[in-house]
Length: 184
Image (cartoon, rainbow, N blue to C red; front, side):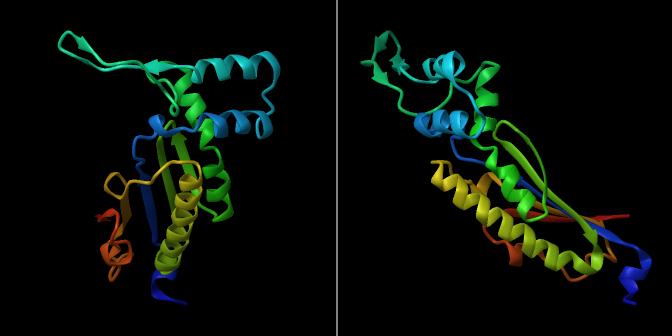
């Protein structure tokens, strides 16, 4: 038996994802279609949500001057209870992708944490699984007009100095802020 396995030492791989302009890039047509086909919204409820996210305008004020009004083509309103819920429904397929990779996930609005707990002997293989998961999530996000932002995404390993002796996350995932924490 390998020494680390016999010591029952574990490591945790933890990825905090960040999106660029998350709420502002929600495609109304994709959202409404998903609410109807994936979640069974229909009739008055779907019509009410459609009227909530579509038909909005915006303008800019500089001092006492206002710009012309422009139609808002994308995004869900912020500063209300429904906006984060609609965004979560828009991105709910992240949960399916994570489950397919055996990755645990916690999500609220645009903040998503992906994590794996594994015996130390499997840390590098587990990391590869997490990278494959985030790659699939990135592709799915892109198809939904969302963009993972490497500068807002952080990767962290938690483990003991025994569990992570040679692992260097920056060389494995150079596009994401990363760090390794050794637990005493």
